[in-house]
Length: 280
Image 1 (cartoon, rainbow, N blue to C red):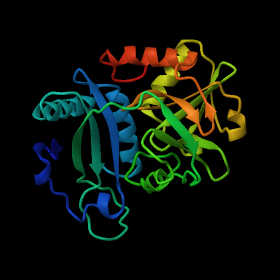
Image 2 (image 1 turned 45 degrees about the horizontal axis):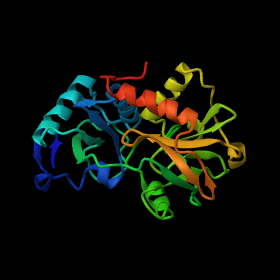
Image 3 (image 1 turned 180 degrees about the vertical axis):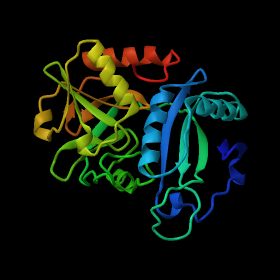
Image 4 (image 1 turned 135 degrees about the horizontal axis):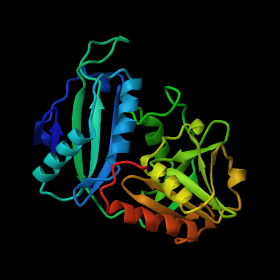
């Protein structure tokens, strides 16, 4: 696969990033992962909005427009044969000397990667993780280069079909290793809120909007394992795998087509056939 790096499409083997880039030295960088459907990057406006918020938090000075990002996605997609793909847009702070200089980063490095879309599990197993969800570096979690908490917790999970679910240090449900989590109890859809340290997912935003449109009661908040006992459905979401049911959570079995999950999955797939840039 070719990649797009600071203005040009190049072969992966030709890519070069400075060892003095603060994205490498100090983790000062952010990214977004998304996929295309018939060439259109679904919910790209919401992805760019979240990315821009993170850039502003990190004092990385750049403004990315939706139209510009769509153009470079199409440029890279066509250079790689024109197939739909899994894309990662990465903005790193750029070169600077060693040391904690708080001044703005004015020469960031922009990179776009493409990966072949592969079949993902149509259902998942889940387990509680022993390693707690770490606290965000700032008030809310950014989709940044600081990913060791996730990688370390991934060691607890036996295979890619199993999603690990984080709890906070005080036992509140937060998120999955690479997903937002939901459960249904007495007809109400529950999901953790941002105070749990979870990433405010773009797909999550769409899921909750669809649920409310359908008249499904939604509760966001801080919930413990005890609060989730008696759930009739569990599922997870992210931008690549979309919405996936949890069919076994440790010892308990759940349906792969519960009524709330099935309705939301159907509506989500309908949305992906449209050029939707943002959740209304």
